[in-house]
Length: 241
Ligand SMILES: [Fe+2]
Ligand SMILES: [Fe+2]
Image (cartoon, rainbow, N blue to C red; front, side, top):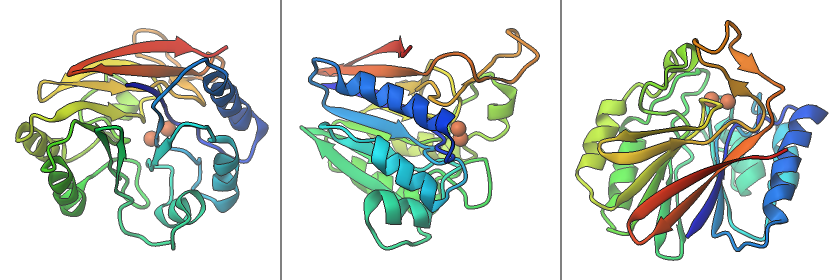
């Protein structure tokens, strides 16, 4: 199984964000393939507005399944209505999508009106029931549940990571945890599972030992390819110029 993982498109109605997302999708759709899925791990829109989601809906298109989850810049009701074609509603946008024999648990870690993340009782309870099915499962959420050494992001990371750890520790079928939010390709572990953050499409966040600046908007967009071969999980990162 091969998954393309991108994140943080931040569609804002302007040409810059749209052009960068378009470049990534054209690259993926032009590959010989096949891919099994394309995951976009949140901050799809910049302000959660309908026209931003209309742009996302027009450009995040592929012959492969495109799996979307919300981030802190997204708005649940509009996300549901425009991207999923569902009635708007304020409940967490949690969805389990099965591709082949693998489940993508697409978790909503957003907190309306805030930048940090929380899964909370509803989403953690839902995730528990998804994992109980026993299928190999990618746990996907916007906010990394770990420190990534970007001070601006570490201040607004997942706040109930310990509770997520407790849920994942009880299930051997968690293949990997896939996140966004950090606008950087990051690989680490969480509860002994691989944890990978996809690079940001719209921009790259810099590390304290790289620069006094926080964000670089000139570095090209990048993506991750995840390969699942039996139980082995491998990631490649690719810059899209
Ligand atoms: Fe973002
Ligand atoms: Fe974010």
